[in-house]
Each structure stands twice: as C-alpha cells, then as structure tokens.
Length: 565
Image (cartoon, rainbow, N blue to C red):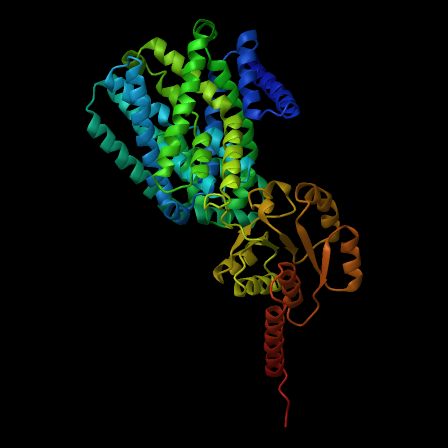
C-alpha cells in the first residue's frame, strides 16, 4: 500500500530540494528564478533523475490556477470597468496584429494559409504565468504598463479558450461557429454566475469565517474558492484558469482580499516552480539535438516579430515609443497554452508533427528568455525617455494604494481617515476585529480584514507603496518583535505609534517607531496633525483643520455639560 505512494512522493521531494538550491544559485548569478527552474527541468531531463509524470503535471497546472486566482484578486468588477480599453481594446488589437503578422510569416515559410493563421493566433498569446510574476516582483501592478499588460493577458486567456475549442472542433468534426457561440455563452454565464455567487454566497461565508478569527479556516476557504471555481469552468468545457480568475474576482474589492492573497501566496509560488520545471522536463532531447539551430532561429525570430508587432499595436492607441517598446518586450514570449495546443493530435496533423515539436521548443525558449527581455525593454524605454526629456503617461504609477496605512479603525483611526479624506489624501486601513470592521465599512470607510502583525499580509496590502503606517492601538511587545523585520523590508516607511503618555512615547521611540501622544478628549486629532505634517501639507490648512476640530469638541462638551443659570 505504501510503495506506490513512496514512489510518487520521491520525485516531488527531489524537486523541492533541487528547487531550493536552484533559487539560491539563480540569485547568486543574477538570473531570475524562472530561468533557473527551466534549466533545472532540462538538467533533470538530461540526467534522467526525474521524468515528467501525472503528479508533476497536476502540480504544475495548479500553479497556473493559483496564479490566475491571484490575478483575479486584483481585478474587481470596478477595476475591470476601468480597464475595459486595456482588456478589449489593447487585447484585441494585440491579438489581431500578431495573428496577421505571424500568420503571414508562417505562410512565407511554406505553411498553408489556414494552419498558418491558426499557428499565428496561438503564437500571439503571451505567458500569464511569467508576465504576472514579473509585474508582481517589480511592484508594477499600479503602473500603466503593468495594468495594460494584465488587461491584455486577461483577453488572451479568453482567446486561448476559443483556440482550444477550434482545435477540438477539428478533431470531432463539429461545426465551428456553433461551438464558438456556445463557448462565448458559457463564458458570459460563468462571469454572471461568479458575480452572483460573490454577492449571495462567498461574501457572507467569509463574514462568518472572520468571526472565528481562525487562520486555518481562511486558508481552507481560499483554496476552496480557487479550486472549486476552476473545477466548475472545467466541467463547463472552459479552462480551469478562467474559473480561477473568476474566483479571484469574487473576492476582489472585498475586505478579505488582502488576507486571502496572503494565504494563497505560498501555494502560488511553490506550485509555479513546479510549472516552470515541468516546461524543462517536457522538452524532447532528441529534437533539441537534431534541430537546435532551427529552434534557436525560430525562437529568436518569434521574439523579434512579436516585439515589433506588439509595439505597433500599442502605438495605435497613442502610446509613446518608449512605452510601446517596454510593453512589446514584456509580452514578447508565447503562452504556456501554446504547449497544450501544439500537442493536440488534430493540430499536429494540420500543422505537421515536426513543425509542432519545433514550435513547442521555441515557445519554451521564449518563456525562459522573458525576464531578461523584460529587463532590456525596461532599460531601453528608460534611455529613450531620458533622451526625449518628456515624461510619458505610461511611466507614472497611478497611486491606487494611498500613502497612509491605518492599523485599527477605532475612534483614532476614524478621525485620521476623516482628516485624510478632507485633505484629498488616499489611505488604506486594516482591522482584525470583525465587529469593528463591519461598522467601519457600513460607515463608508475603506478597510480590510487582517492582522498587520503577520508579515505574509504586507505584500497583499501593498506596504511597499506606503509612506506612513499608523498603529492606532499598538502593543509594545508585538511592536518590538515586528519592527526589525519591518525595517528590513521597508526601510523608508515611517511607522507611527499612537500612545497615551510621554513614558509610553519613550518606550516606542527606543525601538525605532515615531510616537505621537494623543490624549485629548477627541481621539485622533493630534495623530492626524502629525500625519498631515509629515506629508508636507500646508501648515496653515492643518492648523485651521485642528482649530475646527477643537471647536467641534468644545461645542460637544457644552452640550454634555450645560451651564445652569
């Protein structure tokens, strides 16, 4: 009974161990982990230590599922409406341009017209797994380049579903147009069902889970939503990744987005490593030996053509040359979906088995080159911007996060949020008390559920984009243990601790926090003044705001203690 389990688990243990070593070595030689994982897969393939099997394939596919779930977490329906041009405008322009250009190139190499344009459409897809990871590592989620790339990738994932349907129709002999219409109807129904479930089922379930304040239950719920949403779309004949993306969208914009993102992150990172290793394992060694020069030429040609075509598509939307090139380099690779499509028997019969094998190898090489290509594109765009001397709209990040982060939405946190709103300063807030959270949301405050003492949540709440963090009810022991880690990760972040007395202020100052004594009758006034001053706002405006608050406080005191005649 145990022997089959041991045989299945041993390759996974070996991959985990080698994966850790690969990441360390990749960092040491300044290679991205993606390239390291791909090289590890090729090395294991050559040595024969590990062969691609069902367990590795499932883990690799789950890595892409969790990645798309995480992308969906940052793509709320409101965000989708704001990005409608990027998704359907840029996305369709990029797909059309690359399909035509690559299809014509395939025809020039002797491929018949219909297979040539099918190959062009497949190669037009870019890798969500790679590009989304690069965007996240560079914290470009709020930059126009990153946001537009994400929108294009969402459109491409939808286009990939239709390419898979076309391939299936070729094998079954069914009519193509009805199959495509049915797929579009299913995708639309899946989106509608996801939004309905988010309102009726998912949000109330997470409200219930929040009351337990149990981290394990949050982990289970995050996994449940990601996997079940993917399973449902898979049953409908759509891709698992579309379902995972919709599952993330169900929670995007809710107070639980950050904590779910922190719970899913370890699974996403670990399983994506298996995905990239599996790509290296999938390469045919005999093919590489026989056709290595052709594969290199096809891969290089594919990358160059896609850079040019992507840049042209972006220029059509009046992007600058630097921004168009940067996005062109970022999306120059081909998608992991192409590996599936070129492995399907009807596609191999239509295009040719040898051609498909060469294209599969070229796709893997293009994916492996992406981190370096993205770096080159970014550097080239920077030099062109410096030479022109004019800022471009694609470079400036949109401050979606807000410079101030409030920990705890009690009276002090609310007063600070009110002050920031009056001064038109964006903020974000977090609270681990479910009752206080519900009341704050009901009163119109932007607040997420979670505990900032858990470092896993720092990236999901975008602490790297903040200037000031305000602890409205700090605990000295907890602050002492967290401060060294926070200082290492965010050395420029100003961390303010709200205290009641000068003695407490001295305590917090000794561990590197900025104390603010806020002991007035109305909590939060002194805290708000300290934060507004650190944001370099006009001192007279701040003084006038403080005077108004003191006047309001005095009027409230008179109503509570009327003077008898």
